[in-house]
View 1 (spheres, one colour):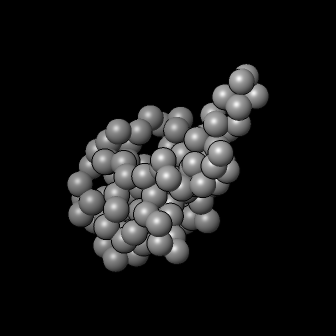
View 2 (tube, rainbow, N blue to C red; view 1 turned 90 degrees about the vertical axis):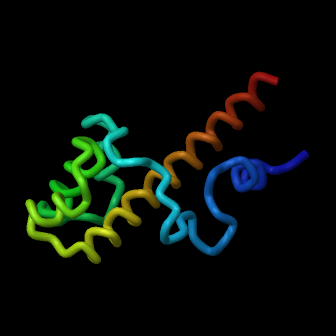
Length: 110
């Protein structure tokens, strides 16, 4: 029987390299996130810049183009890309935790 960690690694969408997220492995297209979900997730990130947070909100929740978000909020496109990766990394970790707890719960009922 495989361990929970092995199960999560095998069944999650994360790459099997040193990080949960590869540079161009976007896991969530912009515009597919609720306002509440965004604010819960942003609390888990190391991101604290109001400009970046507003730009990320426009990108992920309001489905604005990346260039529009950068121009409107005065952030560099390169740094915004880094912050998108950090945000998506948190999403990956949360998804892995959800899978872990779902597996734990199913094992308890067996």
